Image (cartoon, rainbow, N blue to C red; front, side, top):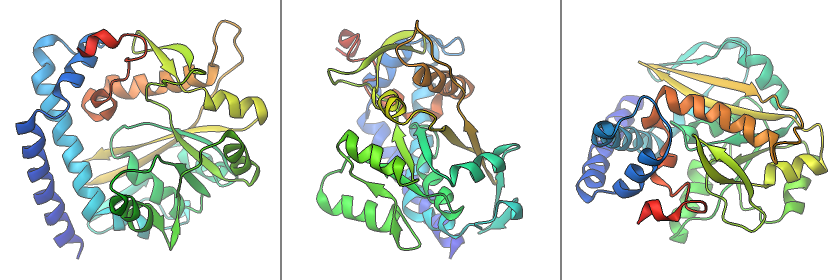
Length: 288
């Protein structure tokens, strides 16, 4: 079954890649972002190649999302049994990640990003016994949202995606000992957005992490990413370290941005945030 699903995922990703590339999907936004930010490894001549690699990676991960996601929902719950092999793939925990994952079982704040196969992290954490709840904006059409909530973002019959809308709901989730997951790499276009910098440029930051930490000080903050090496999947988990800084409106986001910038500089074609208008609030003119 796993072999068939891998074949279907590969076939699906080829079709998706062809459609995205022929249509020039998000090409203008990707080029605008790459020309705007500071990445020493990326020159203007590299943009077409990097755009193609980004589409290739994205298509592959979408294929895995639809056809191979089930493998992450069957992974062992005990961190001691890793590395393990399932469905012809090796699954490992990065050095130092097991103690962090153990602590994540007690809840906290989990800041994630549109980096690599980020969707696969959710079911893996759930299988490890971590009380994950992830805030997602409902997508359209409604039938697609039902598929995402009930079939993809669900482990052992429990959906982990929620549509929490108010700060009171977010605080309640922390009080219940949940690990509240929040995407924090997008442009914040609300009036309470915090000023900051990302990849060497001014950018608006999500104020929610700081709000939650003000109301629940001492809440641990975590980041995770999935490393793909040949036929091996390696889960990295870290607890963010940050200190109150009078010169910074958001020390926790500064620490998060530093982590994400490191990941992006390692492989820019794995950050799908380049397809978003990340710097629109500060520099809308670069997208026109």
